[in-house]
Length: 311
Image 1 (cartoon, rainbow, N blue to C red):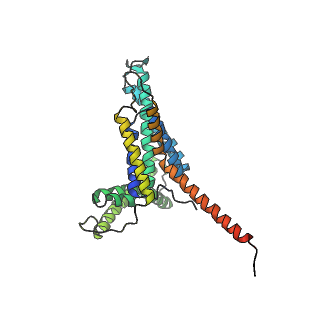
Image 2: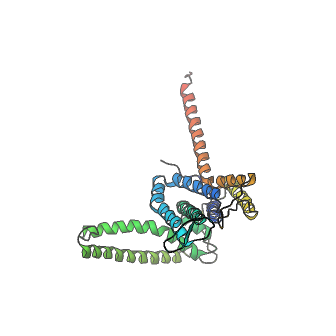
Image 3: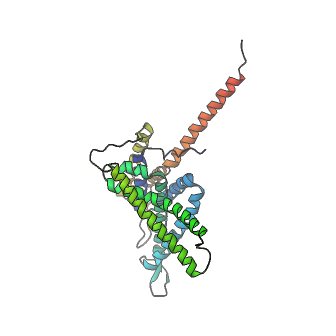
């Protein structure tokens, strides 16, 4: 059986702070090297979490969205000094707008990938723990929203199967029959979603959720590993914020493409890459620890079995 992801088993505050940092830096640091570091870290962690599903999600959703952003940006953004061609409606197509479109597409892809990892790691119970005391209504809505999509998909498959057994199949018949079957499934799903939301709200209200002075059980405790990771992330965030405000990670796209490169900038990019690869490194450390323990166990068993019997 596959072991749980090491970073997913960390404290919810550590998970939330990490994703907040990488999402913030992915949207603000438009330097190509920073975008490449964020893309590398996000893709590596998504592959560790979901493997085949991560590749399918990238090809079906992330890649078309990024390509659409890269193609649409030069059509509406005409800034830049290097004119490549003239569009049929008279606007220029500039090299700078094309490069900026590619950077914006990479930034959008990074955000989508990191959000998919966030959905896998920070689940509803962690959100309730994080915001249950400060914003109980918001935490309940967020947890219900995160659970809604997979539960809605599973319930829709069950409803479609029941409708098919009753003779209402979406994939068969004419247009009127297919529309009737689809409308029946949609009506059943809307009724189910409303009833499920009302039942969840009534259940949480009957348990006293959100009342002042209410206590709750929690299994999350900050361990030494969590404190080390938190200090590491805050150190990286402080260094990156300093480099960002000092202009070491700036990159200009208009009116001409220009970006400085220095040893300090290179160190900051490598530090950002290490921050993005933190979950993957945690997983590697966990695998190494498990492999060492397994090797010690095998060595101990072989040593015990090889000893001669004494009377």
